[in-house]
Image (tube, rainbow, N blue to C red; front, side, top):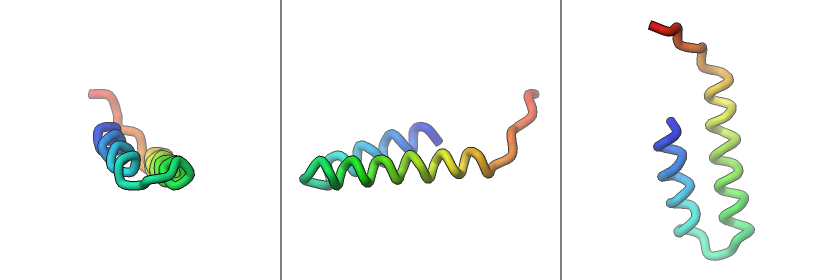
Length: 46
C-alpha cells in the first residue's frame, strides 16, 4: 500500500502544474489511504 501511495504521489506531483493542485491531490490521496488502512482489519502476526 505504501509503494502504491508513493508512486501515486509522484504522479500527482508531475501531473499538475501549480502547487495548490499538487498539495490538494497528494493530501486527498494520503487521506484516502489512511481511511482504507483504518477500515481494513489488522492482520494477525504469523
